[in-house]
Image (tube, rainbow, N blue to C red; front, side):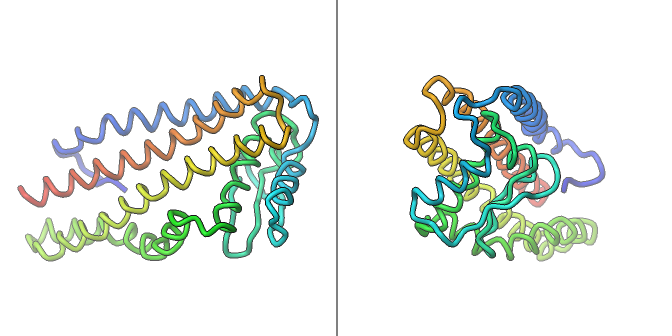
Length: 226
């Protein structure tokens, strides 16, 4: 949530903005490309998700369809893998890659993967911090109250930590997904590269978000010093 006025420090954000735009383009173009390529096994994303869960001895996670494009996610609170309609029903390389990735999160949860546990632990704090950080900093800036600016910086630092913790969680889930797809024979060897491209494009969006948050924190520190 950047400030609603321009100051020279906003120039710091330009690289991250460019990366974010590029990441969004890559994920949409790559996903749409491989959404049109059917897998040789002709199994749906939902079937792949169920199969990988069973192969890993996970019996208490349900797979269900969500609403909206690319609304895929794993909800650890209720232990459900939710797949968007095109990935739940579809048998494309993109559908299978996304389904396997979300099940990768379920496997992380099942195995008590530390970065995932840490992300879930700090999520409530981060939600509050992301809402309060900029208002606190702005009020402190306008009223020349260093304490409020420092509180805003501390709150936003928590947001940065959340983004940094998210990176290994997402990359690890993608690595698990590719292993499961190949080991389980769910994709042919020549199809793995397509699935990898889909997952790498999606991972780029998390890198862009982390870069934006980190540069925003640097910007706050510069404004605080000035």
